[in-house]
Image 1 (cartoon, rainbow, N blue to C red):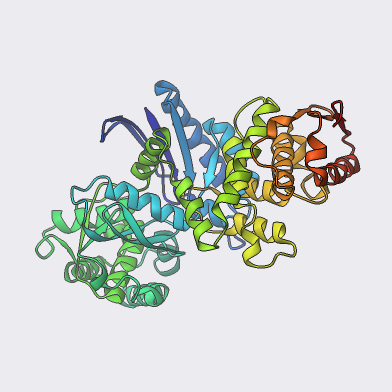
Image 2 (cartoon, rainbow, N blue to C red; image 1 turned 135 degrees about the vertical axis):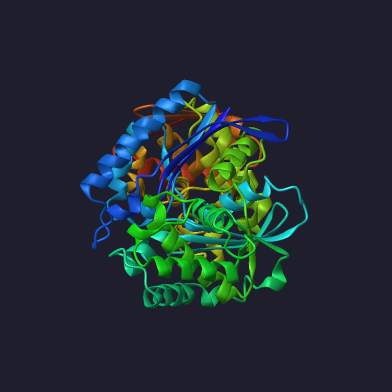
Length: 487
């Protein structure tokens, strides 16, 4: 049993699901429409009321999780917590409230997870499709074929910005709608060619806002009842006739969601006009289902992150054999240091694979270039926190340790740093496959013992170890090397 929690700009939502073979069954769902994005002030700060409401909502969702005790839980935060300037300060409160780490995912990762959720719910494995999700703070457009994603873009426009910017006083006028649609079109015009109809055979809308629009069209007999450009424009005209959100009389949507409907409708019309297509099918699938499927893939050793790293290595022409040797050696040494948990092991392995990527920019300072690339690259499946940790390990692979002093305060992270540094030194010294000749212990100090004759067989290693002793001593950690007889 797995759980996905989506901290969206309009609502916080939860799914608890179980997998039986290739089938996902949702056993519990919860939704709290807290309108987090509405709490953003002019300076990009979430106000105290919004933060308190978010914390209370997370505590409520935690009670649901506690009833089921799922094997794995993933909590993802989207646009509002991506852009809020005080999001980082709020995250510890949020994590305490929900009881799990909160991952602020990129817009591109959000789009990939949305597509995964949609693709896994459809019966057409080879269908070329476009998936659109209009959220409170951003809109994601994804092009794919079956399970494969071919292009993904996230646009910083959503229902909250449109509603607040063009319908803030509740009045619904033709001029306001025209301005809202034109503003939205300007966000999508550069993407029109990339997502043109010739690239796909069917378009899907995955967000709750688009399902609400479809519901209003169907229940009020607008046109032929489908989500088409002509029916969307007809719905726009019906809204203009209402004149004010308080006078909205159409069935199929709750009164408090009318402002969201206005913003979403202006964005959806803009997308269909700018990308030049007419009909869209709504589906009851998206981000949360994608997160659940991603957890299932991770549990079955089909982690998207491994594929992302391999794609990254190919893109920057990293020597795969050399990278794999360093990664394997680093993990081997790390395990021999007996860390308290395996929390850093996979990140250490990925860091080992990626440690030389920066050589594609320059061999001078390559480790610094590598760290920057790892931290800022678009790596599917990885969170900002994941990439920051890997970048720290990559940066620490050589040279002074003052630059990563804060990370070294965590004992297991310090062991991971030492393991990667030694693995890189073994590579430079052309030592392959005999890492067991070195015993390493690390607590308050580092103690190494080499097998007899080993340093004689690898004379440059002594130079590396002497430098390593100086680097650790510089930050107050004693490092000693004891050689066996004849070593």
